[in-house]
Length: 514
Figure (tube, helix red, strand yellow):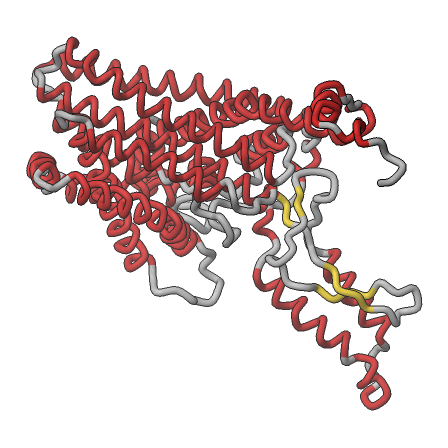
Protein backbone atom coordinates (compact mmCIF):
# COMPACT_ATOMS: atom_id res chain seq x y z
CA UNK A 1 0.00 0.00 0.00
CA UNK A 2 2.98 2.27 0.48
CA UNK A 3 3.60 2.47 -3.27
CA UNK A 4 0.02 3.43 -4.09
CA UNK A 5 -0.87 7.07 -4.13
CA UNK A 6 -3.72 8.17 -1.93
CA UNK A 7 -5.48 9.97 -4.76
CA UNK A 8 -5.61 6.68 -6.76
CA UNK A 9 -7.96 5.22 -4.12
CA UNK A 10 -10.47 8.00 -4.36
CA UNK A 11 -14.22 7.39 -4.71
CA UNK A 12 -14.24 9.27 -7.99
CA UNK A 13 -11.74 6.87 -9.53
CA UNK A 14 -13.81 3.86 -8.39
CA UNK A 15 -16.98 5.26 -9.94
CA UNK A 16 -15.13 6.14 -13.13
CA UNK A 17 -13.77 2.60 -13.39
CA UNK A 18 -17.22 1.12 -12.87
CA UNK A 19 -18.67 3.30 -15.60
CA UNK A 20 -15.96 2.68 -18.17
CA UNK A 21 -14.78 -0.90 -17.60
CA UNK A 22 -15.37 -3.33 -20.46
CA UNK A 23 -15.58 -7.06 -21.13
CA UNK A 24 -15.65 -9.33 -24.16
CA UNK A 25 -18.28 -12.07 -24.54
CA UNK A 26 -16.24 -13.84 -27.19
CA UNK A 27 -13.82 -14.92 -24.48
CA UNK A 28 -16.46 -17.53 -23.51
CA UNK A 29 -17.97 -18.18 -26.91
CA UNK A 30 -18.98 -21.78 -26.24
CA UNK A 31 -21.00 -20.88 -23.16
CA UNK A 32 -22.98 -18.10 -24.80
CA UNK A 33 -23.56 -20.12 -27.95
CA UNK A 34 -25.05 -22.88 -25.82
CA UNK A 35 -27.31 -20.39 -24.02
CA UNK A 36 -28.52 -19.01 -27.36
CA UNK A 37 -29.29 -22.54 -28.59
CA UNK A 38 -31.35 -23.13 -25.45
CA UNK A 39 -33.42 -20.08 -26.26
CA UNK A 40 -33.95 -21.29 -29.80
CA UNK A 41 -34.93 -24.72 -28.49
CA UNK A 42 -37.55 -23.20 -26.18
CA UNK A 43 -38.90 -21.19 -29.10
CA UNK A 44 -39.17 -24.36 -31.21
CA UNK A 45 -40.98 -26.36 -28.52
CA UNK A 46 -44.49 -24.89 -29.11
CA UNK A 47 -44.35 -25.64 -32.83
CA UNK A 48 -42.93 -29.16 -32.49
CA UNK A 49 -45.20 -30.00 -29.56
CA UNK A 50 -48.34 -28.87 -31.35
CA UNK A 51 -47.37 -30.94 -34.39
CA UNK A 52 -47.20 -33.99 -32.15
CA UNK A 53 -50.42 -33.03 -30.34
CA UNK A 54 -52.30 -32.52 -33.60
CA UNK A 55 -51.12 -35.83 -35.00
CA UNK A 56 -51.96 -37.64 -31.77
CA UNK A 57 -55.35 -35.91 -31.52
CA UNK A 58 -56.39 -37.25 -34.91
CA UNK A 59 -55.10 -40.68 -33.96
CA UNK A 60 -57.41 -40.63 -30.93
CA UNK A 61 -60.22 -39.33 -33.14
CA UNK A 62 -59.67 -42.21 -35.54
CA UNK A 63 -59.89 -44.77 -32.72
CA UNK A 64 -62.92 -42.97 -31.26
CA UNK A 65 -64.83 -42.85 -34.56
CA UNK A 66 -64.08 -46.53 -35.10
CA UNK A 67 -66.45 -47.39 -32.23
CA UNK A 68 -69.35 -45.59 -33.93
CA UNK A 69 -68.71 -46.45 -37.56
CA UNK A 70 -66.76 -49.58 -38.46
CA UNK A 71 -67.21 -51.56 -35.24
CA UNK A 72 -71.03 -52.00 -35.68
CA UNK A 73 -70.51 -53.11 -39.29
CA UNK A 74 -67.80 -55.59 -38.28
CA UNK A 75 -70.05 -56.99 -35.54
CA UNK A 76 -72.89 -57.44 -38.04
CA UNK A 77 -70.56 -59.24 -40.47
CA UNK A 78 -69.34 -61.55 -37.71
CA UNK A 79 -72.89 -62.38 -36.63
CA UNK A 80 -73.92 -63.02 -40.23
CA UNK A 81 -71.04 -65.47 -40.50
CA UNK A 82 -72.37 -67.34 -37.47
CA UNK A 83 -75.89 -67.42 -38.91
CA UNK A 84 -74.76 -68.65 -42.31
CA UNK A 85 -72.51 -71.43 -41.01
CA UNK A 86 -75.26 -74.11 -41.19
CA UNK A 87 -75.90 -73.20 -44.85
CA UNK A 88 -72.31 -72.75 -46.02
CA UNK A 89 -70.84 -75.55 -43.98
CA UNK A 90 -68.10 -75.41 -41.37
CA UNK A 91 -64.50 -75.35 -42.54
CA UNK A 92 -61.49 -74.69 -40.44
CA UNK A 93 -60.73 -74.92 -36.74
CA UNK A 94 -62.55 -71.72 -35.69
CA UNK A 95 -66.13 -70.55 -35.93
CA UNK A 96 -64.89 -66.96 -36.05
CA UNK A 97 -61.50 -65.39 -36.62
CA UNK A 98 -59.82 -63.87 -33.54
CA UNK A 99 -60.48 -60.33 -34.78
CA UNK A 100 -64.17 -61.14 -35.27
CA UNK A 101 -64.40 -62.60 -31.77
CA UNK A 102 -62.93 -59.40 -30.32
CA UNK A 103 -65.36 -57.29 -32.35
CA UNK A 104 -68.37 -59.32 -31.14
CA UNK A 105 -67.19 -59.01 -27.53
CA UNK A 106 -66.83 -55.24 -27.90
CA UNK A 107 -70.31 -55.02 -29.40
CA UNK A 108 -71.88 -57.04 -26.58
CA UNK A 109 -70.06 -54.95 -23.98
CA UNK A 110 -71.39 -51.74 -25.51
CA UNK A 111 -74.96 -53.07 -25.70
CA UNK A 112 -75.01 -54.34 -22.11
CA UNK A 113 -73.37 -51.22 -20.70
CA UNK A 114 -75.76 -48.94 -22.62
CA UNK A 115 -78.75 -50.80 -21.20
CA UNK A 116 -77.26 -50.36 -17.72
CA UNK A 117 -76.53 -46.67 -18.35
CA UNK A 118 -80.19 -46.06 -19.27
CA UNK A 119 -81.06 -46.49 -15.58
CA UNK A 120 -78.71 -43.68 -14.54
CA UNK A 121 -80.52 -40.36 -14.14
CA UNK A 122 -78.30 -37.57 -15.47
CA UNK A 123 -80.58 -34.79 -14.20
CA UNK A 124 -80.60 -36.11 -10.64
CA UNK A 125 -76.82 -36.39 -10.72
CA UNK A 126 -76.55 -32.79 -11.96
CA UNK A 127 -78.69 -31.38 -9.15
CA UNK A 128 -76.91 -33.53 -6.56
CA UNK A 129 -73.52 -32.17 -7.63
CA UNK A 130 -74.77 -28.61 -7.97
CA UNK A 131 -75.86 -28.61 -4.33
CA UNK A 132 -72.29 -29.11 -3.12
CA UNK A 133 -69.93 -26.33 -2.13
CA UNK A 134 -67.25 -25.03 -4.46
CA UNK A 135 -64.33 -26.40 -2.44
CA UNK A 136 -65.96 -29.81 -2.18
CA UNK A 137 -66.53 -29.89 -5.93
CA UNK A 138 -62.91 -28.94 -6.55
CA UNK A 139 -61.74 -31.82 -4.37
CA UNK A 140 -64.19 -34.20 -6.06
CA UNK A 141 -62.94 -33.18 -9.51
CA UNK A 142 -59.31 -33.84 -8.54
CA UNK A 143 -60.27 -37.22 -7.11
CA UNK A 144 -62.09 -38.04 -10.36
CA UNK A 145 -59.00 -37.22 -12.41
CA UNK A 146 -56.87 -39.59 -10.35
CA UNK A 147 -59.55 -42.28 -10.50
CA UNK A 148 -59.80 -41.89 -14.28
CA UNK A 149 -56.07 -42.52 -14.68
CA UNK A 150 -56.22 -45.55 -12.41
CA UNK A 151 -59.20 -46.93 -14.31
CA UNK A 152 -57.40 -46.42 -17.61
CA UNK A 153 -54.26 -48.15 -16.38
CA UNK A 154 -56.15 -51.28 -15.34
CA UNK A 155 -59.01 -51.18 -17.83
CA UNK A 156 -57.05 -52.03 -20.95
CA UNK A 157 -55.47 -54.96 -19.11
CA UNK A 158 -58.96 -56.26 -18.36
CA UNK A 159 -60.03 -55.93 -21.99
CA UNK A 160 -56.80 -57.52 -23.28
CA UNK A 161 -57.24 -60.41 -20.85
CA UNK A 162 -60.77 -60.93 -22.18
CA UNK A 163 -59.68 -60.86 -25.83
CA UNK A 164 -56.81 -63.28 -25.25
CA UNK A 165 -58.93 -65.63 -23.15
CA UNK A 166 -61.58 -65.77 -25.87
CA UNK A 167 -59.14 -66.30 -28.75
CA UNK A 168 -56.38 -68.35 -27.11
CA UNK A 169 -55.63 -71.58 -29.00
CA UNK A 170 -57.52 -74.47 -27.45
CA UNK A 171 -54.56 -76.83 -27.44
CA UNK A 172 -52.87 -74.75 -24.79
CA UNK A 173 -53.26 -75.67 -21.13
CA UNK A 174 -56.14 -73.90 -19.42
CA UNK A 175 -54.63 -71.22 -17.18
CA UNK A 176 -57.54 -68.81 -16.82
CA UNK A 177 -60.86 -68.51 -15.03
CA UNK A 178 -62.96 -68.65 -18.19
CA UNK A 179 -64.38 -66.32 -20.83
CA UNK A 180 -67.65 -65.54 -19.02
CA UNK A 181 -66.02 -64.23 -15.79
CA UNK A 182 -63.63 -62.14 -17.87
CA UNK A 183 -66.56 -60.82 -19.89
CA UNK A 184 -68.48 -59.69 -16.80
CA UNK A 185 -65.33 -58.09 -15.42
CA UNK A 186 -64.98 -56.11 -18.66
CA UNK A 187 -68.66 -55.08 -18.58
CA UNK A 188 -68.33 -53.93 -14.98
CA UNK A 189 -65.18 -51.96 -15.78
CA UNK A 190 -66.64 -50.18 -18.82
CA UNK A 191 -69.83 -49.33 -16.90
CA UNK A 192 -67.98 -47.94 -13.87
CA UNK A 193 -65.55 -45.98 -16.04
CA UNK A 194 -68.43 -44.49 -18.01
CA UNK A 195 -70.14 -43.45 -14.75
CA UNK A 196 -66.92 -41.83 -13.58
CA UNK A 197 -66.58 -39.84 -16.81
CA UNK A 198 -70.25 -38.84 -16.51
CA UNK A 199 -69.59 -37.40 -13.05
CA UNK A 200 -66.60 -35.53 -14.51
CA UNK A 201 -68.75 -34.08 -17.30
CA UNK A 202 -71.49 -33.15 -14.81
CA UNK A 203 -69.02 -31.35 -12.54
CA UNK A 204 -67.68 -29.44 -15.54
CA UNK A 205 -71.24 -28.60 -16.55
CA UNK A 206 -71.94 -27.22 -13.06
CA UNK A 207 -68.79 -25.08 -13.33
CA UNK A 208 -69.97 -23.66 -16.66
CA UNK A 209 -73.41 -22.82 -15.31
CA UNK A 210 -72.29 -21.26 -12.03
CA UNK A 211 -73.03 -17.54 -11.83
CA UNK A 212 -69.66 -16.27 -10.61
CA UNK A 213 -67.56 -18.81 -12.56
CA UNK A 214 -65.49 -19.39 -9.41
CA UNK A 215 -65.49 -23.18 -9.78
CA UNK A 216 -64.42 -22.92 -13.42
CA UNK A 217 -61.58 -20.59 -12.45
CA UNK A 218 -60.40 -22.96 -9.72
CA UNK A 219 -60.54 -25.94 -12.08
CA UNK A 220 -58.51 -24.05 -14.68
CA UNK A 221 -55.93 -23.01 -12.09
CA UNK A 222 -55.51 -26.68 -11.28
CA UNK A 223 -53.84 -27.08 -14.68
CA UNK A 224 -51.14 -24.61 -13.70
CA UNK A 225 -50.46 -26.57 -10.51
CA UNK A 226 -49.48 -29.39 -12.87
CA UNK A 227 -46.51 -27.28 -14.00
CA UNK A 228 -45.13 -27.20 -10.47
CA UNK A 229 -45.39 -30.96 -10.12
CA UNK A 230 -43.69 -31.72 -13.43
CA UNK A 231 -41.01 -29.25 -14.51
CA UNK A 232 -38.68 -29.84 -11.56
CA UNK A 233 -38.51 -33.61 -12.00
CA UNK A 234 -35.84 -35.47 -13.88
CA UNK A 235 -37.09 -36.74 -17.25
CA UNK A 236 -35.58 -39.06 -19.79
CA UNK A 237 -36.80 -39.34 -23.37
CA UNK A 238 -38.97 -42.32 -22.51
CA UNK A 239 -40.62 -40.53 -19.59
CA UNK A 240 -41.26 -37.47 -21.73
CA UNK A 241 -42.78 -39.73 -24.39
CA UNK A 242 -45.27 -41.08 -21.87
CA UNK A 243 -46.09 -37.60 -20.63
CA UNK A 244 -46.69 -36.44 -24.21
CA UNK A 245 -49.06 -39.36 -24.81
CA UNK A 246 -50.86 -38.54 -21.59
CA UNK A 247 -51.26 -34.90 -22.63
CA UNK A 248 -52.66 -35.97 -26.01
CA UNK A 249 -55.21 -38.22 -24.33
CA UNK A 250 -56.11 -35.52 -21.81
CA UNK A 251 -56.64 -32.90 -24.50
CA UNK A 252 -58.86 -35.18 -26.58
CA UNK A 253 -60.89 -36.27 -23.55
CA UNK A 254 -61.41 -32.65 -22.51
CA UNK A 255 -62.71 -31.83 -25.99
CA UNK A 256 -65.28 -34.65 -25.75
CA UNK A 257 -66.29 -33.53 -22.25
CA UNK A 258 -66.77 -29.97 -23.50
CA UNK A 259 -68.87 -31.35 -26.36
CA UNK A 260 -71.06 -33.20 -23.85
CA UNK A 261 -71.41 -30.03 -21.76
CA UNK A 262 -72.48 -28.04 -24.83
CA UNK A 263 -75.03 -30.71 -25.82
CA UNK A 264 -76.59 -30.75 -22.35
CA UNK A 265 -76.76 -26.95 -22.19
CA UNK A 266 -78.20 -26.64 -25.68
CA UNK A 267 -80.89 -29.16 -24.78
CA UNK A 268 -81.86 -27.14 -21.70
CA UNK A 269 -82.25 -24.01 -23.84
CA UNK A 270 -84.27 -25.80 -26.58
CA UNK A 271 -81.33 -25.77 -29.01
CA UNK A 272 -81.22 -22.00 -29.17
CA UNK A 273 -78.14 -21.05 -31.18
CA UNK A 274 -77.71 -17.81 -29.22
CA UNK A 275 -76.84 -19.76 -26.08
CA UNK A 276 -73.95 -21.41 -27.91
CA UNK A 277 -72.22 -18.05 -28.17
CA UNK A 278 -72.63 -17.65 -24.41
CA UNK A 279 -70.74 -20.90 -23.86
CA UNK A 280 -68.14 -20.21 -26.53
CA UNK A 281 -65.83 -17.86 -24.48
CA UNK A 282 -65.65 -20.33 -21.59
CA UNK A 283 -64.88 -23.23 -23.93
CA UNK A 284 -62.09 -21.25 -25.61
CA UNK A 285 -60.73 -20.23 -22.21
CA UNK A 286 -60.55 -23.84 -21.00
CA UNK A 287 -58.84 -25.05 -24.18
CA UNK A 288 -56.44 -22.08 -24.22
CA UNK A 289 -55.37 -22.77 -20.64
CA UNK A 290 -54.79 -26.44 -21.52
CA UNK A 291 -52.58 -25.53 -24.49
CA UNK A 292 -50.67 -22.91 -22.49
CA UNK A 293 -49.95 -25.31 -19.65
CA UNK A 294 -48.72 -28.00 -22.07
CA UNK A 295 -46.40 -25.59 -23.88
CA UNK A 296 -44.89 -24.14 -20.71
CA UNK A 297 -44.52 -27.56 -19.11
CA UNK A 298 -42.77 -29.16 -22.07
CA UNK A 299 -40.60 -26.10 -22.72
CA UNK A 300 -39.11 -26.13 -19.23
CA UNK A 301 -38.86 -29.93 -19.01
CA UNK A 302 -36.79 -30.01 -22.19
CA UNK A 303 -34.71 -27.07 -20.95
CA UNK A 304 -33.93 -28.50 -17.52
CA UNK A 305 -33.20 -32.00 -18.87
CA UNK A 306 -31.25 -30.85 -21.95
CA UNK A 307 -33.58 -32.59 -24.42
CA UNK A 308 -33.66 -31.43 -28.02
CA UNK A 309 -36.89 -30.34 -29.69
CA UNK A 310 -36.20 -32.95 -32.39
CA UNK A 311 -37.34 -35.63 -29.95
CA UNK A 312 -40.97 -34.82 -30.76
CA UNK A 313 -40.29 -35.90 -34.33
CA UNK A 314 -39.17 -39.26 -32.97
CA UNK A 315 -42.36 -39.49 -30.93
CA UNK A 316 -44.43 -38.85 -34.05
CA UNK A 317 -42.51 -41.57 -35.89
CA UNK A 318 -43.17 -44.01 -33.05
CA UNK A 319 -46.93 -43.31 -33.10
CA UNK A 320 -46.94 -43.50 -36.88
CA UNK A 321 -45.18 -46.86 -36.73
CA UNK A 322 -48.07 -48.24 -34.64
CA UNK A 323 -50.58 -47.16 -37.27
CA UNK A 324 -48.60 -48.56 -40.21
CA UNK A 325 -47.84 -51.86 -38.48
CA UNK A 326 -51.52 -52.36 -37.60
CA UNK A 327 -52.35 -52.39 -41.33
CA UNK A 328 -50.00 -55.31 -42.07
CA UNK A 329 -51.07 -58.91 -42.59
CA UNK A 330 -49.08 -60.03 -39.56
CA UNK A 331 -50.61 -57.37 -37.27
CA UNK A 332 -51.08 -58.64 -33.76
CA UNK A 333 -53.53 -56.03 -32.46
CA UNK A 334 -56.22 -53.64 -33.60
CA UNK A 335 -55.10 -50.05 -33.87
CA UNK A 336 -57.75 -48.78 -31.43
CA UNK A 337 -56.32 -51.15 -28.81
CA UNK A 338 -52.79 -50.03 -29.70
CA UNK A 339 -53.78 -46.40 -29.06
CA UNK A 340 -55.27 -47.47 -25.73
CA UNK A 341 -52.05 -49.11 -24.62
CA UNK A 342 -49.82 -46.33 -25.89
CA UNK A 343 -51.77 -43.31 -24.61
CA UNK A 344 -54.02 -44.75 -21.92
CA UNK A 345 -57.02 -43.66 -24.00
CA UNK A 346 -59.80 -46.28 -23.91
CA UNK A 347 -62.58 -45.20 -26.31
CA UNK A 348 -65.34 -47.58 -25.14
CA UNK A 349 -66.41 -45.76 -21.90
CA UNK A 350 -66.18 -42.33 -23.49
CA UNK A 351 -68.12 -43.46 -26.57
CA UNK A 352 -70.73 -45.09 -24.35
CA UNK A 353 -71.25 -41.83 -22.44
CA UNK A 354 -71.53 -39.80 -25.64
CA UNK A 355 -74.14 -42.21 -27.02
CA UNK A 356 -76.07 -41.96 -23.75
CA UNK A 357 -76.03 -38.15 -23.78
CA UNK A 358 -76.94 -37.84 -27.47
CA UNK A 359 -79.78 -40.34 -27.20
CA UNK A 360 -81.26 -38.49 -24.22
CA UNK A 361 -80.74 -35.02 -25.73
CA UNK A 362 -81.97 -35.65 -29.28
CA UNK A 363 -85.49 -37.01 -29.81
CA UNK A 364 -85.89 -39.16 -32.91
CA UNK A 365 -89.49 -39.18 -34.16
CA UNK A 366 -90.77 -39.80 -37.64
CA UNK A 367 -89.19 -41.00 -40.84
CA UNK A 368 -87.46 -37.68 -41.48
CA UNK A 369 -85.57 -38.01 -38.19
CA UNK A 370 -84.43 -41.50 -39.11
CA UNK A 371 -83.21 -40.24 -42.46
CA UNK A 372 -81.23 -37.52 -40.72
CA UNK A 373 -79.68 -40.11 -38.40
CA UNK A 374 -78.76 -42.26 -41.40
CA UNK A 375 -77.17 -39.31 -43.18
CA UNK A 376 -75.29 -38.38 -40.03
CA UNK A 377 -74.00 -41.95 -39.72
CA UNK A 378 -72.85 -41.95 -43.35
CA UNK A 379 -71.13 -38.64 -42.70
CA UNK A 380 -69.26 -40.12 -39.74
CA UNK A 381 -68.17 -43.08 -41.85
CA UNK A 382 -66.93 -40.65 -44.51
CA UNK A 383 -65.04 -38.65 -41.89
CA UNK A 384 -63.55 -41.85 -40.45
CA UNK A 385 -62.39 -43.10 -43.86
CA UNK A 386 -60.90 -39.76 -44.90
CA UNK A 387 -59.18 -39.34 -41.54
CA UNK A 388 -57.74 -42.86 -41.77
CA UNK A 389 -56.45 -42.30 -45.31
CA UNK A 390 -54.76 -39.01 -44.41
CA UNK A 391 -53.28 -40.47 -41.22
CA UNK A 392 -51.98 -43.55 -43.03
CA UNK A 393 -50.31 -41.45 -45.72
CA UNK A 394 -48.81 -39.09 -43.14
CA UNK A 395 -47.63 -42.01 -41.02
CA UNK A 396 -45.90 -43.61 -43.98
CA UNK A 397 -44.01 -40.36 -44.54
CA UNK A 398 -42.95 -40.19 -40.87
CA UNK A 399 -41.82 -43.82 -40.86
CA UNK A 400 -39.85 -43.34 -44.08
CA UNK A 401 -38.17 -40.16 -42.81
CA UNK A 402 -37.17 -42.00 -39.63
CA UNK A 403 -35.71 -44.95 -41.63
CA UNK A 404 -37.95 -47.43 -39.84
CA UNK A 405 -39.20 -49.41 -42.85
CA UNK A 406 -37.08 -52.43 -41.99
CA UNK A 407 -38.68 -52.68 -38.56
CA UNK A 408 -42.06 -53.29 -40.16
CA UNK A 409 -40.85 -56.72 -41.23
CA UNK A 410 -39.48 -57.68 -37.81
CA UNK A 411 -41.52 -59.91 -35.50
CA UNK A 412 -43.78 -57.93 -33.16
CA UNK A 413 -42.46 -57.08 -29.68
CA UNK A 414 -44.92 -59.56 -28.19
CA UNK A 415 -42.99 -62.36 -29.92
CA UNK A 416 -40.54 -62.19 -27.02
CA UNK A 417 -42.76 -64.02 -24.61
CA UNK A 418 -42.31 -64.46 -20.90
CA UNK A 419 -41.51 -68.12 -21.57
CA UNK A 420 -38.44 -67.08 -23.59
CA UNK A 421 -37.26 -64.78 -20.82
CA UNK A 422 -37.82 -67.54 -18.29
CA UNK A 423 -35.79 -69.94 -20.44
CA UNK A 424 -32.90 -67.48 -20.55
CA UNK A 425 -33.08 -67.07 -16.78
CA UNK A 426 -32.58 -70.81 -16.47
CA UNK A 427 -29.74 -70.93 -19.00
CA UNK A 428 -27.72 -68.08 -17.47
CA UNK A 429 -27.24 -69.69 -14.03
CA UNK A 430 -26.38 -72.92 -15.84
CA UNK A 431 -23.63 -71.10 -17.70
CA UNK A 432 -22.23 -69.66 -14.48
CA UNK A 433 -22.06 -73.10 -12.88
CA UNK A 434 -20.92 -74.95 -16.02
CA UNK A 435 -17.22 -74.62 -15.30
CA UNK A 436 -17.62 -75.97 -11.77
CA UNK A 437 -19.61 -79.03 -12.85
CA UNK A 438 -17.85 -79.85 -16.13
CA UNK A 439 -15.21 -82.01 -14.44
CA UNK A 440 -17.75 -84.14 -12.54
CA UNK A 441 -20.55 -84.64 -15.08
CA UNK A 442 -18.88 -84.02 -18.40
CA UNK A 443 -20.97 -80.94 -19.22
CA UNK A 444 -19.74 -78.34 -21.76
CA UNK A 445 -17.18 -75.92 -20.50
CA UNK A 446 -17.85 -72.28 -19.75
CA UNK A 447 -17.16 -71.12 -23.31
CA UNK A 448 -19.59 -73.59 -24.83
CA UNK A 449 -22.24 -72.74 -22.25
CA UNK A 450 -21.84 -69.06 -22.97
CA UNK A 451 -22.23 -69.77 -26.66
CA UNK A 452 -25.46 -71.56 -25.79
CA UNK A 453 -26.75 -68.37 -24.17
CA UNK A 454 -25.77 -66.30 -27.18
CA UNK A 455 -27.42 -68.72 -29.60
CA UNK A 456 -30.60 -68.70 -27.50
CA UNK A 457 -30.61 -64.93 -27.37
CA UNK A 458 -30.05 -64.70 -31.12
CA UNK A 459 -33.27 -66.64 -31.66
CA UNK A 460 -35.20 -63.72 -30.20
CA UNK A 461 -36.15 -60.78 -32.46
CA UNK A 462 -33.63 -57.98 -32.44
CA UNK A 463 -34.25 -54.28 -32.95
CA UNK A 464 -31.50 -51.86 -33.76
CA UNK A 465 -32.33 -49.69 -30.81
CA UNK A 466 -28.94 -48.00 -30.72
CA UNK A 467 -29.66 -45.90 -33.79
CA UNK A 468 -33.17 -44.64 -33.12
CA UNK A 469 -35.68 -44.01 -30.38
CA UNK A 470 -33.65 -45.23 -27.44
CA UNK A 471 -32.68 -43.97 -24.04
CA UNK A 472 -30.55 -45.96 -21.59
CA UNK A 473 -32.57 -46.81 -18.51
CA UNK A 474 -30.34 -46.65 -15.45
CA UNK A 475 -32.52 -48.27 -12.78
CA UNK A 476 -35.39 -49.87 -14.66
CA UNK A 477 -33.87 -52.91 -16.39
CA UNK A 478 -32.46 -56.07 -14.88
CA UNK A 479 -28.79 -56.82 -15.40
CA UNK A 480 -28.21 -59.57 -17.96
CA UNK A 481 -24.90 -61.40 -17.58
CA UNK A 482 -23.28 -62.31 -20.88
CA UNK A 483 -19.83 -63.52 -21.89
CA UNK A 484 -17.77 -60.81 -23.57
CA UNK A 485 -14.21 -62.04 -23.04
CA UNK A 486 -12.18 -63.27 -25.94
CA UNK A 487 -11.07 -66.42 -24.13
CA UNK A 488 -14.35 -67.09 -22.36
CA UNK A 489 -13.22 -65.89 -18.92
CA UNK A 490 -14.52 -62.32 -18.77
CA UNK A 491 -18.10 -61.76 -17.58
CA UNK A 492 -19.47 -58.26 -17.34
CA UNK A 493 -22.97 -56.84 -16.79
CA UNK A 494 -24.85 -55.35 -19.67
CA UNK A 495 -27.99 -53.27 -19.34
CA UNK A 496 -30.37 -53.44 -22.28
CA UNK A 497 -31.83 -50.31 -23.76
CA UNK A 498 -35.57 -49.91 -24.09
CA UNK A 499 -37.00 -48.96 -27.47
CA UNK A 500 -39.80 -46.42 -27.60
CA UNK A 501 -41.73 -48.85 -29.78
CA UNK A 502 -41.90 -51.22 -26.81
CA UNK A 503 -43.16 -48.65 -24.31
CA UNK A 504 -46.85 -48.22 -23.62
CA UNK A 505 -48.60 -45.74 -21.40
CA UNK A 506 -48.02 -47.50 -18.09
CA UNK A 507 -44.67 -49.29 -18.58
CA UNK A 508 -42.29 -47.01 -16.73
CA UNK A 509 -42.98 -46.47 -13.05
CA UNK A 510 -41.47 -43.02 -12.70
CA UNK A 511 -43.52 -39.99 -13.83
CA UNK A 512 -46.15 -42.14 -15.49
CA UNK A 513 -49.25 -40.17 -14.45
CA UNK A 514 -47.88 -36.61 -14.61
